[in-house]
Picture 1 (cartoon, helix red, strand yellow):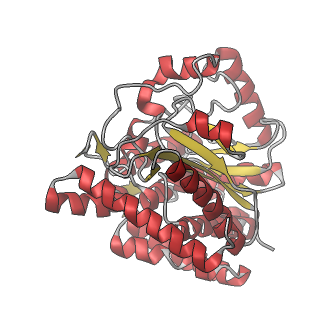
Picture 2 (cartoon, one colour):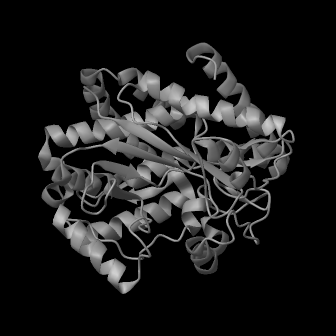
Length: 377
């Protein structure tokens, strides 16, 4: 039996020309299942948790088709790929709910650094100590998932020097998050942050990965990977998810994979390595040179993923989801979204043209997949 998996998808709305237009409050009022962010230019939907990858694929596609149909009928709008305000608008905050006090705090504290689009991958792990252990492993390897998903090389229609501008500027909060050694450590630390005011509420933990649950920090039942840029290709998203699930299965089969056991570094040193690797990947994604958390050796993100792929492929085959993992090779061979966009930009020096083409490709791909694999909305 596979682990349960679900997604929280944030996506921009706007015009076919690529200009992002805030509609989240109207969408959330008119359609069930869609949520607002503090800025109205991106809207969020979440999938139910499923074990089966085929069901996950349709769970990703059907709300997007419903949203796309709504946008088309209400002004000819569409969905905009990418994880930053690629073509402009980065200097203004567009409130979705001007009366919401937490939104006021977000705007005044972070501004448009948080007006990004992403995908959060949740994987169900019922036993709290195993969940905390999995969070330790995934946090040390979170940069690899960002490397696969990087999709935000532009601001104001020009390259920023980052492959993931989103993660390069995102205000990770609190600034220092330890490698949790136990569930009780996570509880104690969270309570302390709330008392200190470094977290406004239990959701105000914005790190690459966190334990999640209906009454956190006390009741936790899933790992939430938050580092990924928006992956618009559902097949690619399932491949990234399959790598994540495979690594968790490997950890459950071999508890010695726990970084507290099989690394030569202290927990504090591991946090520093993880943070530095995240920064390196935000700049250069698959081409970034990283420090391996086990022995400290230098390795590129792409080579590290290739190494993990071998073991992940074996355990994925054992659990019956190997075919959903194999599209990772396409990303490694062709490059992630940011790398492809930058190659196109190098030819025509036109960021808007790159985004416009991506809008069309996203819609075509989505329609083709849904028509082949899912029932009509």
